[in-house]
Image 1 (cartoon, rainbow, N blue to C red):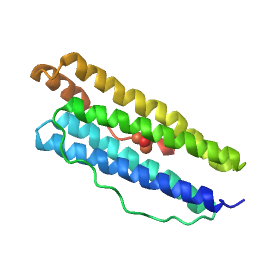
Image 2: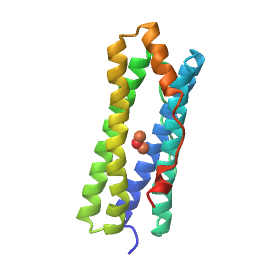
Image 3: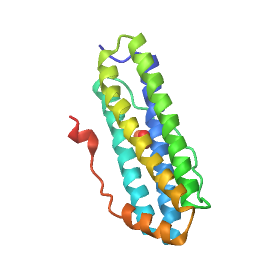
Image 4: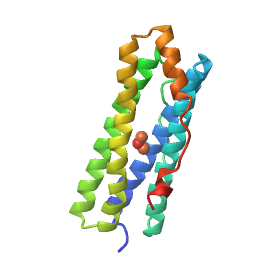
Length: 172
Ligand code: FEO
């Protein structure tokens, strides 16, 4: 069964949202690096790379189901954040919005009896739990240190450890 036009359009919209996510986190990474917070920059750079794997997972699904990938304009992200807490609060908020979009896609796939899309989306449902938990954990830590230089540097060091892993491949 091929994708319906409605499902195809909705998935293309998600491709755009995931591209924007990559763009947003790359912008945060560049801002952190400009401020010499290399660990924060690393975390966001890895996050941007992860987002590109999300783009590609949906992109692949559209093509494999006989659909057409249509790339749209990507919105311009903010370019600077006052504090690391501001950036991570934005990241957490953004992830909650992405979760809501994924949930809407699941509802649509169910309504259309599109089991293949629903199954593909299940991976994103699980992934979003992680995405929200990871960003919120850092928000909570940043709140704890209250923008103190020493606290920020400790968190910066911790975030420098993150390495990119393609979870979309591991899950297949
Ligand atoms: Fe692809 Fe961070 O959601």
